[in-house]
Structures are given as C-alpha cells and as structure tokens.
Length: 82
Image 1 (cartoon, helix red, strand yellow):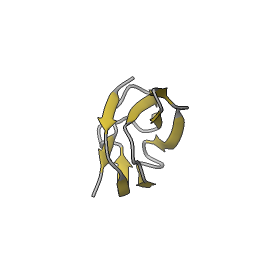
Image 2 (cartoon, one colour; image 1 turned 45 degrees about the vertical axis):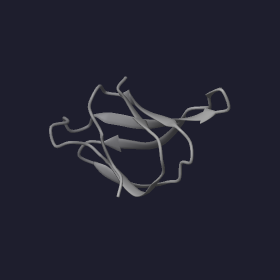
Image 3 (cartoon, one colour; image 1 turned 60 degrees about the vertical axis):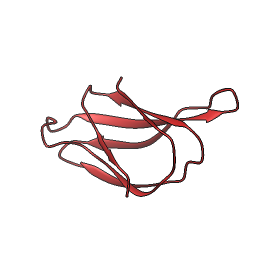
Image 4 (cartoon, one colour; image 1 turned 90 degrees about the horizontal axis):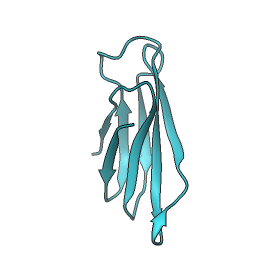
C-alpha cells in the first residue's frame, strides 16, 4: 500500500492512472481523515479500472490532516489539486 499525505483541501482535483497500468487493473483510492487524537474511519473515494475508468474528478473539502492510500493492484495513482 502506497501512502500520500496531504494537509489542506482540494476542490475539483483529479485521480488518474498512468498509461503504464495494464488494462483491467483495479485500484481504489482510500481517504483516512484525522479524528481528534487518532485516525477516523477509512473511506474509498474512488475506484479506477485501467482501460475503463482511467480518471475521475474529485471534489474534496478537507480542513484537517488526512491520509490517502491505495488498495488493489500495486500501481501508482496521480492525485492533482488545482
């Protein structure tokens, strides 16, 4: 599982698979927000499938620290923010 850390908020960002991911590979992007002194419940915010759904727009509003991680095939996902 790869992790990306982010502090801030994202409006109209995007999650995208790179062109090198084999067709049919599924990868879910998981968001785990901070809650008080610990981590909150992890939520799948999107699932990408190479060759079918390679990218998705994200409208996330984060006012606290959150962790992004991947589930599924061990591929990379590009997260962008405006």
